[in-house]
Image: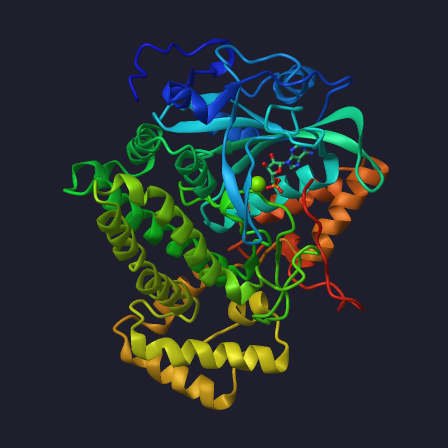
Length: 486
Ligand code: AMP
Ligand code: MG
């Protein structure tokens, strides 16, 4: 797959490969982005452009807007829409890139491979009844939250740019249109495997599994049962990801199987948000009426989604169907333990523990119970924890905690350092996100958005200019609701 030596870097630094198009043709459609009438750059991520090996000069202006809207293609681009299926709120549906195209896989100077995708780029064969377009507000929102996640050190797709199209998209109301340029380790989803399995052709499924192993889990290729090792590796990487979400109070909002990436990156930012006051029952998404994707449900749902992956892959694990299913089930069984371990590592670090063990679970849980009872702010409670002046937790808890810290070989100063690195000061507070979006949309004023992005770049540092980003907004009179990114 990765014979990339022959691909030269073109003018502007583009160096595209198209390994996905060497997969069976059922898995994608060659297509082109639709033209837009008046593309204008709204936000451009210069640092990311440089990481990708692109020359940022010129990209942040008209030329960039023309490329990133899809009106012109960068050199070497061969756009495709990817096919996938998915369980949406538990129901199986055929989906696919209905409003996105993959331009290609950019090979960066370090030799890494990145999908560059335009989201909101027009209709494809997978559009169903949709218009193929995206609105500016949700695309800016995805830009902010994905870059915030990156700043927090949580695996995520990135955002290279948002271009306003100058066109109107019609939702419940007329809205300004936009295209987001999304950069990802890949866009292979659990739903991609569900789609491949639904074709009933083991060759297609096997090709997809081999490809994903090569691209994301090459160490599995040399295992005696690579497919099974691959499933286990995916379970571990998802467990780590969800534990990281937990550690910062992130709620994805629509953990459908088509919104779960095999790369282990957070993908498809729709109605997601960060909690202020700790409450495991928190739901933000307006469409999640039964709380299927509530904060505390996320590890359970990830497990459910992984079961759909395991089922899909089972037919190629063994020539005997029953044996294949058994192997898939065994692989899946690593998930609960992996999540528990990843949760303990992530939460233990937040209270300064270098090597948290099973016996530390009550210490973490007691603090969370205290937060729930006192409606404490999740982010700030952890950020202000200190073994000597400790602001959070009951007095009994603080005593037990100080004793526990005293039993580890590292000093209080070391523990403080670990906590500083594990407890962000800045998260994208809901009122700050909404304020920045409102100013951008209503007054074409992007200054708040830029200040917010700047603060989110280094969320673990105390900076005087970040003061305004440290506090939750006034308590909402009605629960905060987010809307799907369509
Ligand atoms: P999402 O809610 O963005 O994860 O999208 C779920 C599915 O619906 C994906 O297959 C999208 O490509 C598709 N989709 C969402 N919005 C649109 C739209 N406006 N036009 C066409 N397809 C869409
Ligand atoms: Mg999606």
